[in-house]
Length: 357
Image 1 (tube, rainbow, N blue to C red):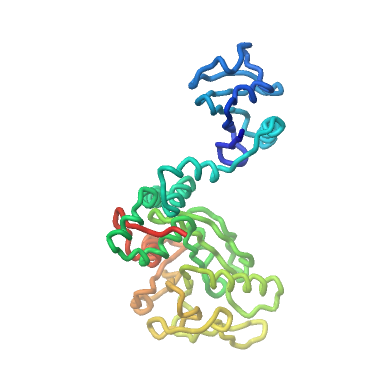
Image 2: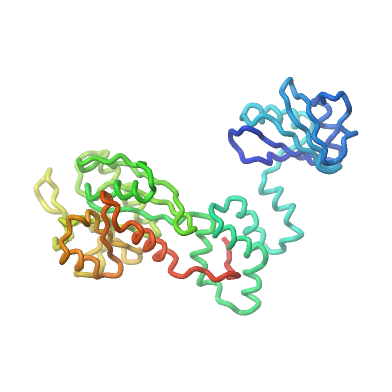
């Protein structure tokens, strides 16, 4: 049976590598590859680099072992697809990287958890996550079970070895969500403007905080809107809030000491923001969070430069509240640390066993 694998990541690139596995790969490749030396491919030993052409395109063919050869070609999608067609036309079939890895690691990694960890390693976004995954591939989870350790306490963390934590920024219009979004990311991803309602669609970007992958989500301001587009933006914000691992409730000094209602200027009446996002729960300094009780929430008082010292002390007296200024870039390091410590209160010790799903 003859199979080939796109070894390099899918998509455009400078160079692509396609590997052929077959009893006689030299015979198959030799049908459409012309070595510049004029010699047949089967005379070259493993480790050789053979320069030549395929359909007038310069390529390199590298014998790896008797049953395996690599073809290094231009990395454009068209060039790779043409090479695949040459191989398919000669009776070979394509396999995925996951299929190849599963076969390759089957003997070494005996359990499903070990195999999942090893397969996830190729997409590990940080050294910290890669280290934990490698420990699982080496049998940390199985050893933990043998010694009677409670691995379930790490189940939530294990989920985020392969997918980012979702941190959703929510609040009224014009409290500085997008400005803070840009500051955390370190570049101007969101358009900011003094007029409320600038952000209507969902903006999301991935970033790394203390070795953990985080998807930061900027949402439309929560308010009573007549405009259909704004209402759709608020509906999407609600959906993101429902899926959040952590909500950053962005507030401003003008909200302090005011009931959790916001004025709708178009209708000159007060509306309950909590009705837009879920049930209310009490969180610190007699303020009310409009978010579901089971959600982790950090109250972030933006525009801290406008807070009096007395008010700053009051709003930050709760352990789940802090003051920052996106404009003056103050309090951001504390915010980033609080985000991670809320999501990952305890870092797993080396060798901790986790079940991957």
